[in-house]
Amino acid sequence: MIILTGGQTGVDRGAWRAARDLGIDRGGYMPSDSRDEDGPVPLEIARELKRCRRPGYPARTGMNVSRATGVLVVVANREQIQQIVLNLMLNAEHVLRETGQRGEICVRTGETDDQAL
Image 1: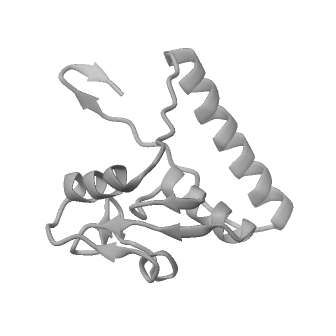
Image 2 (image 1 turned 90 degrees about the horizontal axis):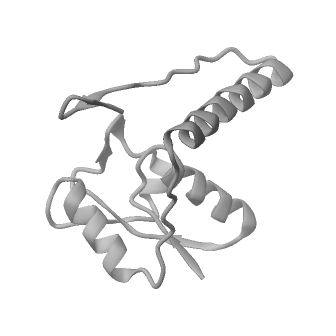
């Protein structure tokens, strides 16, 4: 088994770190500029990824999906998504408190086609 990732934030990085911690092979493609929506892909992840010939996310996603033997798709309704976000925020807050670390929990929202995300 190999975990394919584009190195982007969120679930992709979580899957990469879980695979690393469990000794599962990792790989995948990232955009040619080695960037995600927040900036440069962290070096620890970027070292293990190949760069696409073209910039942008569609090229990266296409390369990774075309090489995958299976793709995990999560389907949820609005209430389930709200519960997931709430759980993630609470878990992050607990970790910060238990470790004595200072941090920031940020939730971004947006709109597309007059539909709230």
